[in-house]
Image 1 (tube, helix red, strand yellow):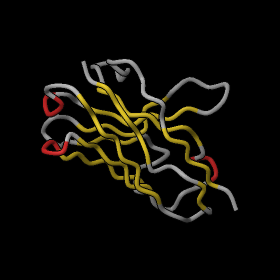
Image 2 (cartoon, rainbow, N blue to C red):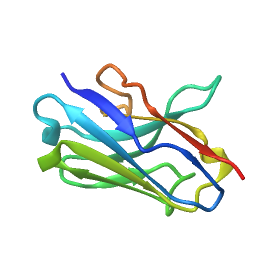
Image 3 (cartoon, rainbow, N blue to C red):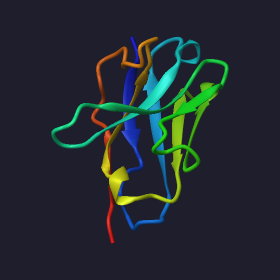
Image 4 (cartoon, rainbow, N blue to C red):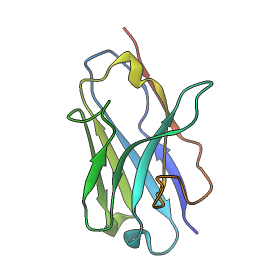
Length: 118
């Protein structure tokens, strides 16, 4: 089983940038496809970006070209570089291993809150 600690979220102005980090504890992190998810009040958690164990990436249309997902298997850490942030990016961001259907595999961490506002 993997466990996740997300950090890096904060208040940022529209057009700004942030880098989120996800530190993973547990075995075999490098073997899992991983994803960044986000959730806003009243809505279900949605997949924003994912990266497989070979480094291939996919992005939701709403963040394509602005967000970059990466992983460092030696450090058991995953990142989300977010640029040109918009108010609609405001959410709590979570990381998890991703199953074939795009859902998270393990229990969720606490997440990290990103607020994009003037």
